[in-house]
Image (cartoon, rainbow, N blue to C red; front, side, top):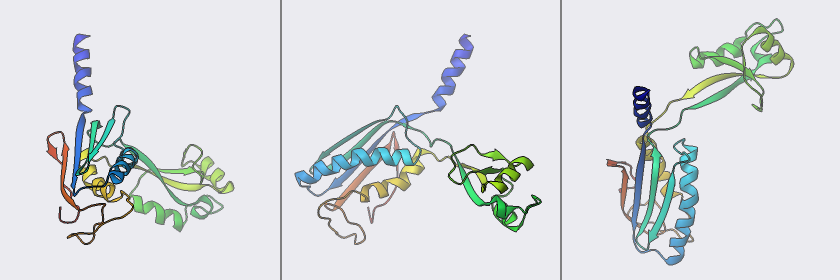
Length: 212
């Protein structure tokens, strides 16, 4: 029993959680902009993590700001994305099969894109369980206007890779009453950004905003 407990503890450690720090250094912000940035970041950070499958119930998001710094500190960020299964909609069964329930060109054109992945039949609104590709389910799909679906497992990425993609979008999505352009012509922000610090534990999260 003791050996089993030790094994369980070791396995749990493989599901790692890390702390993340983001600091955005700017030229001096007005007080009203600081309050607005804190409010926006409190909502944007959580939503962005959830949308990108790197959120869990253990996460603690702390937002702080001074006139020259916007700071996001996230405790217990998962080490990688959660796995995600999606169903991709194809043609209606009545177009994918003929009345004899024989596959037609639309069926082959759709399924060949997915290289032999499992095919299902389901409702357009996706409000029922997906059913396997049996003659009975094909007949039901033909008569009740259902569709062909392919099941796809989304590839998991480690959190560092995900952050590299989402952080530039997160930062530049902040809205203020007036936005400024500076040396970096294609970037607008409340005040010029002068530096960015981005650390996942002791790992640097590399990304660019303009020339920074």
